[in-house]
Length: 458
Image (cartoon, rainbow, N blue to C red):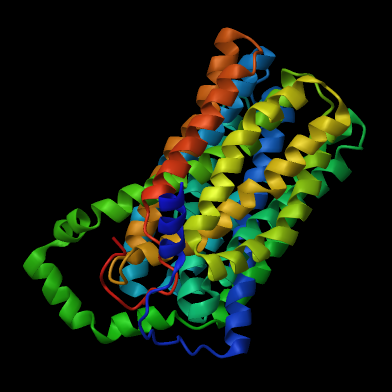
């Protein structure tokens, strides 16, 4: 134990080297922070709205001929379709981001997500156009997923590369704060509109949050057009001719082979964080409502209060990583995530509204946003500058498919096949948490690293 503590203390110590500050004016950094915050809020507002709608609305409106369990499975299968194209979007936009700039890509991805979310609110139902309705639902999920493949990675990358060296953890956590903000906006609107009579809510009430997302989209687009490019990318542009000559001589696959270790540990970190995010927000909500038979407003209230807690805590966690290191804070958070799983399931089984809501407050206000806050900075620092956008988006989106895309579908299929027991759900949640902890244990500490370096962190 003493040896392990010594290793953690050493790992948390920043390298004793002089690292050049980005020297971004404070007003410019504020604009970059706000645009990154709004972009991540839009992505998670869409995600939360879809998961709430999948659990409560999309089954009867888009899959009316299926029994409730199969309708829930079909809704989450449509939801999972967006994850299938996220790696493609990540690879494509990551390449563009390394070649043409972070800002260029982030304007495109934001517009794609905004159009898809708005379109969700305009969808006709199965009763109106038949099988075309679920087809259009899947198509919009594909558009949203392709754009989202680079949004969070790009927002984190641009912001962390622009931040002062000693405050990267704090600014990286702004993106995580945006995800909590998106969840809060979505759950608050959903809770308010769910007070409508059921027929009105199913007819038009559920559409309003999707339609109002256009406000966030336009605000974020306005800010993104006015911000400057990342200082790190500006230095890459100065060496573009030399970098292309290296590409021609060594080939892209040499860089890929050299990055296999940071890629694998980063992928494990992503699985640990993302598995819980999408199982809790993407499956546990629907399971608690449709299988445990809790009032949907109890769950939505817990999600809303948890989002407020997440907004209040995530920047503090970012500051802690600047002081103690990314690795140490991550290990504590992932250990809590693992340990809380079985108590959470037992609390849900009580069917006590206060205790059930408390589970979602703790999950959505504790490990979920704060682990992402650590990851937002840690993964940026893990890779060298030359292909940072490409590697980071690939890691995140492959991880999203393996955890967020497959996790809720597997959990829904297991529940449909085995019945309403919670043990399979708990086992999946704990498996992701264990992967995250083990990967974090073997990952390098990156606090204080020079982001202009072309070398990876390990």
